[in-house]
Length: 336
Image 1 (cartoon, rainbow, N blue to C red):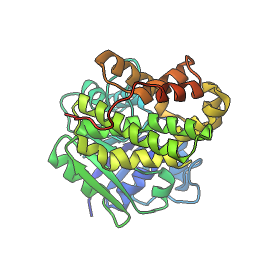
Image 2: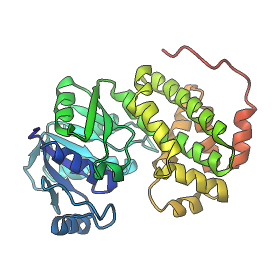
Image 3: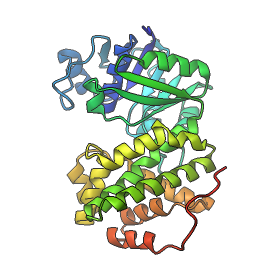
């Protein structure tokens, strides 16, 4: 049993599921969210008021309505919308809470600054802190119901990797450690954009061949971008790359895929977002990554096409046609 002291920040579906993962492995888990009414309900009933109401939180999870100054944890795990990650880090720091390490299970790029999670944490936390990115092919509902699952932990040190794998491993949940933090971050973020593209293609009834081609070429884009940022190619063949990509592109539990499906039907970004009714992280990521790719000369045709649809400068079908009419190239390339 782990015995690690873990603070999970964010009591949404994934944050709640991860809190249960840590508790099942024997960790002492504190779950906090800026929505005090939400955590008060969890503390009072042992159930989430909106997500998976039929599953109780593990007894090892303590829901906190307020952060206690002076409290200390082995790791603070942030599971909040990516665009508010910096604000959440500031809230925990300002509350006087200390953590020996910080992990992030949110996936994306900061829209205005283009920062990745490890860069946001480095700027927000007081002094250097070990960092880990958690990513893999997981839907919160299945994890909460204890369906077998696996995840990649990209940690900046072997010590943190060992801590987190021990703090998460149970009979139904298997974590894997890698020191390729950037690769895990990039894979987790960009798969959301490719899932939007896959949803658009399926919404246009373009067929299984098209979806398979999008997933395959999408993986090539993720690997190309990740290598340019310092990630390792083999990481994108693993759980946080290909695994997460296949899951989000093919299953309608994926909000990004459902958003693409809705967008193909209406052509209206706001209407598609309302139809999904939940945060679609791939939207901000598509804009940020398209800007980065253009500035750094990284070829990202699928991401660029998705960004053009989101910006209203292209229709879904016109974006598909633009991809098919690109200049012919070799399928494989050397990625260094």
